[in-house]
Image 1 (cartoon, rainbow, N blue to C red):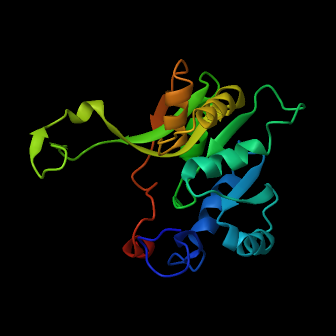
Image 2: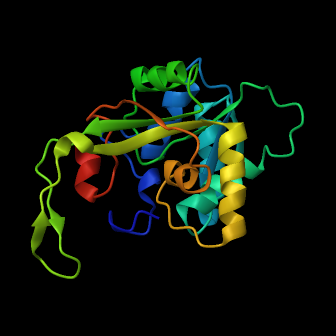
Image 3: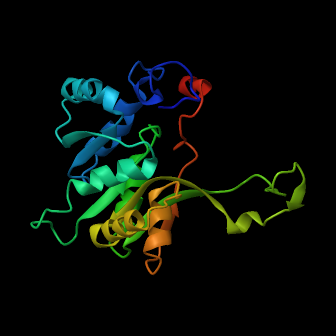
Length: 218
């Protein structure tokens, strides 16, 4: 719902300076990529009709489904995955991509880097180096406990992409366990299919996430 942006309209439907919504920019990036063959938009149930209108207005030919999301991010991802689990005609080289609709500035270069990395890896994510000094804070106190090395950390972005044979089973195991605390799809894979390595490709500072109202104006 993007509550930190403020207002009753989810941030994905708010306009950027060019007048087009955050969601339109995000979907356009994948609609235009020859690496992507099919798009599913997972949205809040109250905004399905609005989303379907955007699909028609933009003539997106790759969008095949607009479906309801869940209360948590992982539930939304699972709803998307579930559409395809029973597809026995799936190409053996099928990959599932997950992208935050609130990252409207993802470039074709990033999408290409992920696609090329998928030729040799079962799971790929996007990240950028940490440039600020990091503090580890003592739990419950505003006190610096240590200063981790920046070289060991990166800031996660999306898209994240996985071979269907590794991400589907990871989600099924997570649901069987019942307690899911991962904040993204890589977290699900690492927790419930840890034998699969996640390869990191270079992101871009421009591939930022719309979080606050001010982000819409930049």
